[in-house]
Structure formats: C-alpha cells, structure tokens
Length: 284
Length: 284
Image (cartoon, rainbow over all chains, first blue to last red; front, side, top):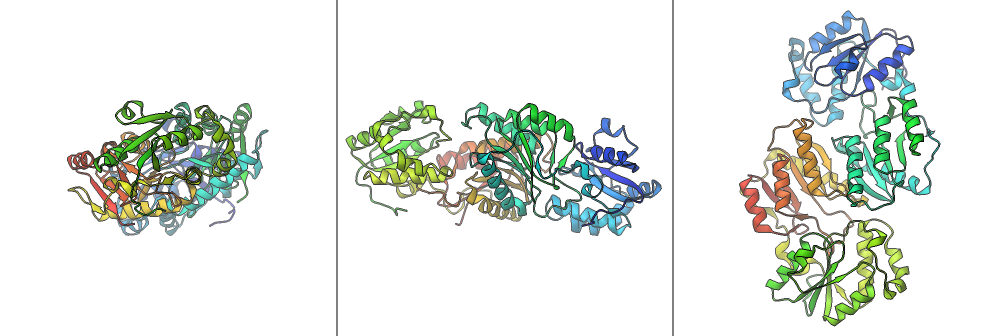
C-alpha cells in the first residue's frame, strides 16, 4: 500500500456510485489539488458529477480512459464509489481492453476485493499511480474516539465488541461490512443490500414486534473486510446512516477509525447529536 | 444428547410458533403415540392447535405446566417451534417460576441457544425427560442426497461449499442459520428476520437489478448453529421456502441431512420439482 504520497499531478477520480467520489473531489479542491472525474456510466450520479470537471466512460473502455487520463495530465488515479455487480450490458469493450482481457480475466476471479485489487494492477502496469482516499483526504476519515455528545455505555460497548468479532469471522467471505447487535444478540448481518437496507430491516423487525427490545439499545458496527484494499473501498457513513440508526431505535454507531469514510462529517455529527446517538471511532 | 429413547408415556409438546409442533404431533399420532400440546400464548398458532389435544399456557407458568404435564401423564417432553425474543408482557409468573428464578436467570445469559439449553435443564431437574424430534419423528428429517429431479451442478456445488464455510464461521455467534450464495458471492446472510425474509430480500435485489446474475443460479444453504441443541431447535424447510427460492431466482436448496426439518416433505418435493429446483441433503 502506498503511504501518503505527495500529489504531483491532477488527480483522476474514476467514479462509481455514491457520494464518496464527490466528497473526495471537494476535499482535494480545498487543498488546491486539481481533479478530473471519470464518471462510470450506469453507476456515477449524473446530477452531482456535473459540478466537477468530468468525462463519462463505460466499463471496458480502458483505451479511452488511459488516453483521457494522459490528456488531462493525471498520473495519480483514485478509484472511488460503488460498482455493484455490473452486468455484461454495462460494458463497452474497446481494443485496449480486449488486449488486456487475459490480465483482467485473472483479476475477475473471487469477490469484489479481488476485482478491485486486480483493477489496481491493470492501472499500475500502464504507468499510473493508484492512490487511496486516506492518502489525500484524511479529513474524510473517522477519527478515533467519540464524535458525539452521547457515548457508548457498558452494554453498548459489549455489543460493539461482539459485532467486531462477528465481522472479523465474516471477513474472509467478502460479504457485508456491517452488523447490528442488540443486547448481545446479532440481529442483522449486511449482505449486498447495504447498510441502509440492513437498518430498514431492523426498523421493520421492531415495528412488527419481532425485535422486542426497548429502543435506545444496540449498535450498528461497521468494519472493513479482511482482505479489502483500503485504497479503493472503505466502509462509509453519512447523515443517512444516522437517520437509519435512529429509525431502527439503536443507541449508536461504531466504526473503525481511519478505515471508515464520513462523507459529510458536520451534518452527520449534528444529526446524531439531535437524535442523542453516539458515533464512535474504534481503535484498529 | 438423548439417543433414540423408547417412548413410554404420552408426549408433552410445548409448542411455540410455526408448523413444527403440529408436524411432530401428526408424526407421533401416526406412530400410535399419544401427544398433548402445551400451546404457548402469543406464539402458538391458535387455529392449528385446535386440531390436537392441548392446553394453553403462558411463559412463566412453570408451576401450571408441570402440574398439567403430570396430570396428562407426560414423562417425555418436547419443546418445539419458535419463541422469538419474548418481551416481559408475554410472561405470567407463577410461584414455582418465581422460586426457579435463580436457575432461570442463569440460563437467560447468552443467545437463543443458551436459553433453550437452560430451559432443558429446568425441566430435567423436575423429573421430565427432554426428547428431540430426531428421536421420535425421524420421518421429518432431511435425508442425505437429492430429493428432487434436479441436482446441483458444479457451480451450485461450489456455492454450497462456500455457504457451509460461511455458516460455520458464523456458528459461534448465535445468528442466522441460512445464507444465499450466487456464483461464489455471499449475497445475503440471515439474521433474526428468518429465511423467508432473506429470500424476499434476494428477490428484491434482483428486481432492482442490484443482483445482476441470470436466474437459475445460486443456492440457499441452511445449517444449524454450532452450539445449537438439536433437541429443541433445527433449521426447517417447507413448501414456502421452495416458493421463496423460486421467486429469488436461485437454483436450489442445500441443508444438512438429519439436522434439518421438513415439515411437509411431499408438498415440498412436488413444488421444487415443478419449479425445477434442487433440494439436497448434505452429509454432516
């Protein structure tokens, strides 16, 4: 993994879904670093990308992408945002991609993590340096300790410990990065549906009285997967996560410090304080 | 664990939610063994229990229950069906229960499994023998091998192997007993919402194109938890599970032989054959 590289070029952000590519672009802009977004068709948010210098690309356009990256003077490249299980119709194969098929094929075995690491190698072989968000936008990372007025009590701390253990056990399986633990019980485990859906499920279980525990108890615990390449993919929290946790009647959120992104820290903290939830950064 | 005890008395079935208590009562009836159901108020199905000799009891009525069990001549007791996270209002404490509070308290630490094992000890101390469904109604257990015309192909077999590994890793956490694996990816993991909800979620992910895989691929894998006392609680499959798997666009179901209940085997197999799904019993 690259450690805090000095940025010497315009940064090319290959942008999948979610708010992360834009949060990173904004953070870099504040630091006076120029960025160009390479928005992945079918994944990147059309409305938001319009606020930034950008080009649209499709999956499979490696030739077009490398040409555009060179034309924009991007030696440093970031790969940010979601790319949930693309299907064949998302791909527009150009010649360079077709020539690269043997190396890409090898990288497509295994789960998301393998794909991302493989994508990393494909870019590095073409002379680009892959950098991670922790390298250039540490302001978006969860700090260690409590962000909110509320803090986890002894029960919440026990739930956090249990959630961490469970996610550690799941780590090798390239499955979700989140679990909800209430009073020592694992209530829900995240699959590909994502954290918002997991929280909506917990809310529903409570509404249907299948989770019969007083509200204000239990924790959402988030942790990266074991083999996750933290340059490309980090668990992320946003104000929406806080809303989901409040609606699910939990006490708070725990996530691994320096390995979790907070796309909009100020709004997230304000909203958590309003709802009297804790948000806490766990020591690695 | 008791091994195949000869039944010498009327069997008392303490009946929680679901079809399992009734399936067991029917199986015993066919074997000429008398049963009485002790239907747990708030959990047991009112319409179905009416078809069998029964008494209604509430959680916490240990005195009433032991008196009724003795009056009905039940030396052998089974505890069957669901009891999802009861709340205080489900309890009606009688004096014997209050006297037993210290032993019950000790059993209420930990997850569902600990509670069940603790409940087992409470009954055994009062002179009842706790028996499991495998002891008396083996006709309800999943056999080894394929039940259906369809059988798992190489990809499905790989998904099954991955699902088993994942559930093994989750075993110590007293969480769900099921996972959906498609083309090597763990798509969804069961929490307290149960298997039907897990399958509905996979269907929804497919409908929303967040799971972009051709239908007829992937497997629902079910397995007991590591410390599960198989006398009280086994993973269960029914025709509804088959419907859910079909709707989710999976290829079939794999469950551990002799450790999975099939409440209505004939209907389940017919429905799976209609939908061209496989249902297969895995060697322990």
